[in-house]
Amino acid sequence: AHLARIEAVDEKINAFLHVDREGALAQARAVDEKRAAGEPLGPLAGVPVALKDIFTTEGVPTTVGSKILEGWLPPYDATLTKRLKAADVVILGKTNMDEFAMGSSTENSAYGPTANPWDLTRVPGGSGGGSSASLASYQAPLAIGTDTGGSIRQPAALTGTVGVKPTYGGVSRYGMVAFSSSLDQGGPCARTVLDAALLHEAIAGHDPLDSTSIDAPVPPVVEAARNGSVAGMRVGVVKQFRGEGYQAGVVQRFDESVELLRGLGAEIVELDCPSFDLGLAAYYLIAPSECSSNLARFDAMRYGLRVGDDGTRSAEDVTALTREAGFGDEVKRRIILGTYALSSGYYDAYYGSAQKVRTLITRDFEKAFEQVDVIVSPTTPTTAFPIGERADDPMAMYLADLCTIPTNLAGNAAMSLPCGLAPEDGLPVGLQIIAPAMKDDRLYKVGAAVE
Ligand code: GLN
Image (cartoon, rainbow, N blue to C red):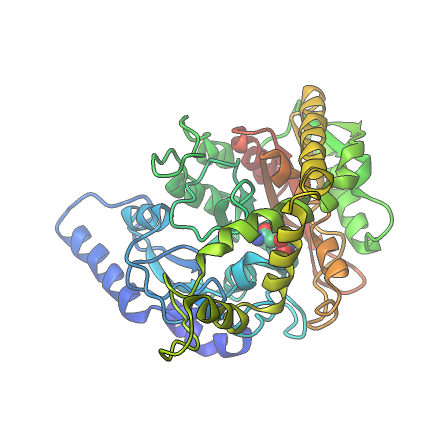
């Protein structure tokens, strides 16, 4: 049914870069056979999942939305892919994304933008716009995203779906193409809080192949999602997450959510986190710096595309020609920014300062979580914007991540879930819930209570 739905609607949405029809049907048949034979089944047996095209899938194309990996067939599965298979899901295919997960609208994909199912002239958010759009258009009931600065939560907000960035280190990064390794985190996307929890539990947990993976039990997210409640909880509202640049309808729905929480028995606490105002600036130095180092591996020798290799050119020239043709504008912009920020003489002033700001943000969170159990905010300052509106204005595009970035810099956990439609445009608004590291279960407890 989901493959038929993809065939019927995805021409208009462009949520999928690759539909693995044969593979999906084979996985579905294998589940049927196991069931018939009375063999034990995984927790998500037979449930279709749309997988962001940033996770390697053995023998199935993995492009990261880039021309530079066109035609590359990974020789191995990411740990997350392996865990999905062990849960007996059916992987429908690979979803569209901003190239190398750099963007907030999915317009930076080398394979064309994804449309927002609520209004096809608008963006679904990014970088994981394909995953969220596949949920909102009922092409998949579950999807996987990655969140370096908001790429799970911001598309969830703009498409009226649920998205969770687990605690950094909670879900393995092995086989997830690296953008900014100290920030990147895979996580679940779904249409309900409980669905997200079931997927979260299936993909999370320690992985010796990822040196930053946390060796501790997975927080009890499913149990929390089944027992939603905020009675007696202290919920923080941060002063810095409102004001100039926030759409009136977004603020209105957020304020109503806070009243709802109060009505359900939560105590609302005002918080001041002054360093959050510096989050965006710090992020746009740290993420490009790490990307400039990570993307050095795309040298035309190891993977995918190779341009100009006609026997007359040096390896260096072939590398340069391949990168020129294979990387898009935003990826080149980040490599240049990052290389500059890391260059000798500038390192302390740019990268060094950004790391200090990162520490201040982490401390602001630590202080905040001495006073509250969770923090809530709008997920994004505005609802979905028109395709093309911010495409030539990187600064305007970067503002979409204002509320999501502090969490990535500090490494704690956050969820976005729908909290109604903005009255002025009828588009979905997202409520963000933020919890301390390894307290991911609190997101689900609160999310299930207000869903
Ligand atoms: N929009 C942010 C960026 O472009 C975040 C992307 C992400 O989370 N992958 O860097």
